[in-house]
Length: 118
Image 1: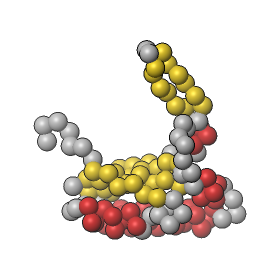
Image 2: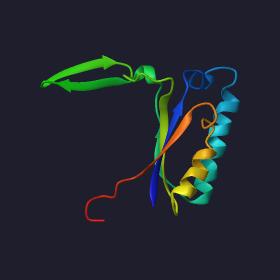
Image 3: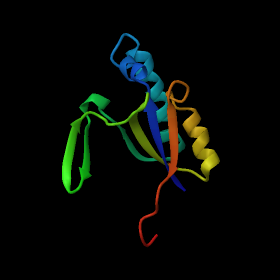
Image 4: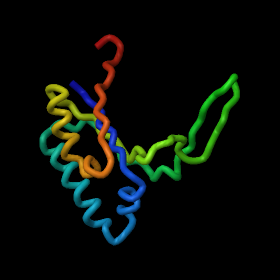
């Protein structure tokens, strides 16, 4: 079964990637992603640009409302995602628990909806 692992990081964690702590931060992510690739479970995914680069669109009464940045009242921001193919939710949770952001932020684990006809 395929699961999306959605990596939510605090602003402090996201900023770590651009400070003197960057080698440790990126090293942890590279090791984690490498482990999933080596296990043969990774089906796709990407890191995302920082939240400040986002644009949010809402349509109200047929009119577009466009705002700079993410529009979320949260202390965490989506930093990236990976699609994995594992046996069950327990296996997906095991991989989510290994994510560098799991202790400072969170990892949302969500089943991928099968394509129509599958």
